[in-house]
Length: 123
Length: 110
Image 1 (tube, rainbow over the protein chains, first blue to last red):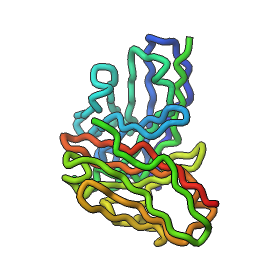
Image 2: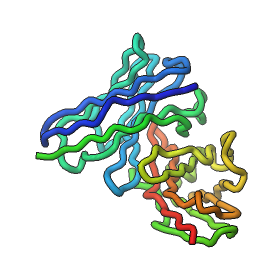
Image 3: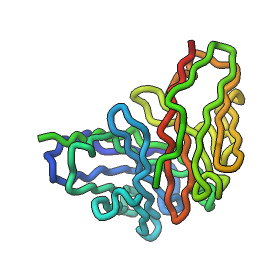
Image 4: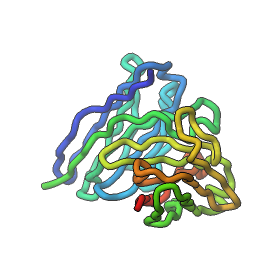
């Protein structure tokens, strides 16, 4: 079965960077895109961007452009999300989410989610 | 990209039906049949309930249904049950390889 296992919680100082990993198993890693979504405490879901694990191409939400970088390692079926220049407002749970399909339509809904990684930004 | 608009909260009694709206624009919801809905219980990851506006994944109760008209999508839950109490989020493809979520709706089962 599809599994997305994320790295553990992080505590970072303002201005620092954080990297969250998401290890995929149970399917062909390079066949499906991967999305990142975050959720600040008590707030809603926020789409951050998408990566194509096949070629590493990315699209980021405008809000995060210049501060976020998605990468992947096909040898370990892992995608990474790095967020730099963090501020307190970046305190959130970060999720990786795999789409339900490989077609255009199938890319834009998320039927498998990682367990989430809590990132706390505090001085 | 602005968030899609959802009511902050809705409520209903067991057995009743409720509908949650999700309003976007002609650049997102209105241009694509690519709205999905997620249920989230406290401390849990979201769960897919509806995709492509009205399709239900296997394993999701047929009490959940979705529809779309113009710039507004809707999620209807019939025969409300206590376990339906949760937060619900819509999400739409927004063009240029981007997506946008709604602000979320808290459902209270009275």
